[in-house]
Every structure is written in structure tokens, then in C-alpha cells.
Length: 206
Image 1: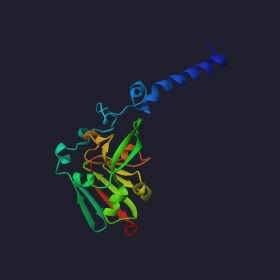
Image 2: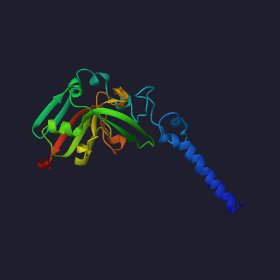
Image 3: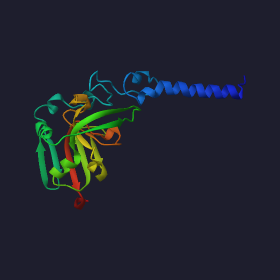
Image 4: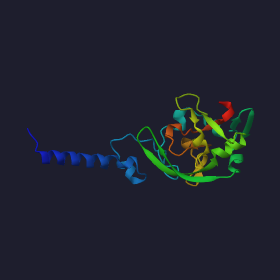
């Protein structure tokens, strides 16, 4: 059988519209996300301010609940200097809020409002005001993305955060409680969750 040129154009155009209709929910938050039938979707941890997708839950990452409890500490390193902070100590520091997206390799994206401590403020606290890089380590002990390296511009960006809250409430365990990294334009897999340590490397450190 043959298809006329006009018919072929119509089929192609109709297919494109159908594809757009089925995938638009992957790039838009809210009810439209449920219409994205053809693309992979992140796990939905539930309703409320933390009700947006995650690519890995705390259980899937193997992080034990007691590791994120009151005894959790963040270790900052800067050359020979080490600073240890608990979550109340972080909350007592200057807080910054930014609306930033996360784009996941699974094919979805979401934009949320994050609040926390600027990474550049943490670098300065660690004695590295002009960092060459930062290595972020998670409580997660296995997997390709338990650590991430951040470039100087990523550390110093005024919207780069160690996020403690999202959409006005504490992070949920699946979203990285007690603290996670959020950096503009950084893929979600590198926005480390359940942060345990940040090692800031100075220019002289190479």
C-alpha cells in the first residue's frame, strides 16, 4: 500500500503531537506529570512539599535511619583544617533560598525551592575562600554517585547550596535529609544526598 505525501505528513505531525502529549509531564510539575506515559518516571515519595520524584530512595541507597538522626555530623575539610557541624549548627548559619531545577538521567525534571547554607560560606568556614574544587561524600557507602567533584564556579555560585529544607519544610529522608547538595545546572545524580563530608581543595593544593 502507498501513502500520499499529504497523508505521510499528517501521520508524522500527528505522531509528534501524540509524543509531546505523552511526554510533557516529564518536564512539568503537578498533575501533568502523570500523563507522561512513554518516559521513565522517578519514584514518587508521596504528597506535600516533598512530593516530587527521586531517582533513589534512602532504602535503595542503603543509608540507615540512625545515620541521619541526632548524632549525624557534617565534616568540612580545608587543607589541614577540619570543622564539624551538627544540623542545628548549620541552621544557625546564614540561610539562602533559591528556586532551582533538578534534571535526572532517568528522563524527568522538577523545579523546587531550596533553603540552606551557601557552599561558598562553608568553604570559607573551612578556611578555603578560593576553592579549586570540592569533593562531596555521602553516607551512602556504595554506588557510582556516592561522591561528586564540584568545580570552583559550582562551589562559588551564589545559589549553590547545602540544602536543609525544601518548599518551606525539612527535607524528607528520600530527598536527602539531613542535608544535600543543590547546584544550578548540575545533573541530579551529582547533587549528592545524605551528605557526610565536604573536602574543599584550595588553589595551592592542586
